[in-house]
Amino acid sequence: MKILVINSGSSSIKFQLFSMKENKIMAFGLIEQIGEPTGKIKMGSFHHEEPITKMLHIKNHEQGIEIISSFLIDEKIIKGLDELDGIGHRMVHGGTMRETEFLNDKIIKAIENFSSLAPLHNPPGLAGVKATMSKAPHVPQVAVFDTAFHQTMPQYAYMYALPYELYERLHIRRYGFHGTSHHFVATQAAKELKKPLQKCNFITLHLGNGASIAAIKNGKCVDTSMGLSPLEGLIMGTRSGDIDPAILFYLEREEGLDIKELDTLLNKKSGLKGICGTNDLREIKAKIKDGDEKAKLAFDMFCYRIKKYIGAYFAVLGRVDALVFTGGIGENAVSVRRKICGELKIFGIGINKKQSEKRGVLVHFESKKSAVKLLVVPTNEELAIAKQTQHLIQKTAKRS
Ligand code: ADP
Image (cartoon, rainbow, N blue to C red; front, side, top):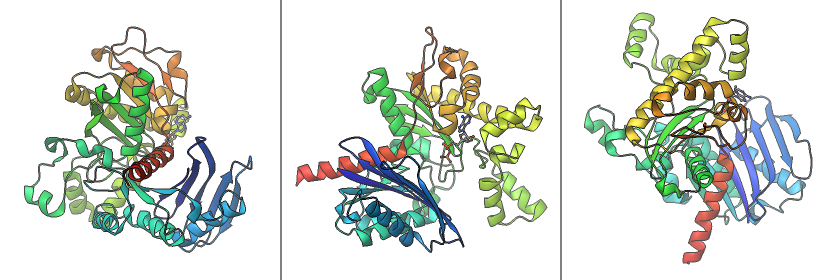
């Protein structure tokens, strides 16, 4: 079975083509700066060691998909997109949809309805869908939502204490994001612990440029740090995470900032970058070594916020089988994991120092006496999307 996974951003398309039977990536690539004077293309396949790179003006997502299709045909991987068994699309906001869904008119309409809640993500996602649909109208196309895994949160966890009619009329509530990743690493962690996921309580930490944490009880999400949008919760690369909303009124009054400027401030100029000038944790660590106090402050703030959420989720879950770290920082930043876990002795957590040095691989790093397992599980959102796409196609084929 050949499944193409498409992840469309506002000016980019990332893709991976999987051979599900052999569990192999046949081709991959990233097209960036779509719509800008010069776009960037980087694509590779299992035929070559080095990916090819090109600079080219790419008008829109449709042309981006055309470039991917031509590449796959030129590389003799497929004869055309219509030969694929399925195409899985990453869709950021699926509102209250709990499941992976076939992309038909009804589902596309539902995604469009949620576009106002994710204006930067859903429209490009749909542009990618429309482009692949016009090139391969008979191939099953599936939407895998970032929000889906979190839709098991109880109402008291997902509501904001705002007038109830705003929830009814405008659907203002917490949705949560990174769901595909939280679900994927929780599934892998359960396998690692040799316990059914339905019996596992986990705190999963997806720490990348975007960062979120989830409380998982008996395999289901019961709380997560992101909310209506991916801005709430942890301190991120350039996003503030939780702040007092009154800061916005204050900035409007004192500095005359308008909504657009406030949006840019909180999403692009805050977080680690806002505190110390860079959102790259590797640079922050280098700056700390050089004695940069703001870099040290950014690092400490980042870890402290995570620690607070972990404490809260211990209270939510009661029993925790494992903390599961993933994402660029979660998988690689040894110092972050050590600092956070080193300050959680109150929960019976202990670290195996040597194991905690490993990075980028599945690893346990709890001490022998630790009451809670500590795991690093590399995430693979594209593979998770491919698997969910395959699962839905096979389940439907069995039924009919
Ligand atoms: P995104 O949310 O954009 O997918 P990633 O999951 O790729 O982000 O994570 C990016 C972050 O991971 C950056 O802050 C980067 O500095 C950090 N990171 C990547 N590799 C390392 C490393 N070896 N050590 C510390 N941090 C790392």
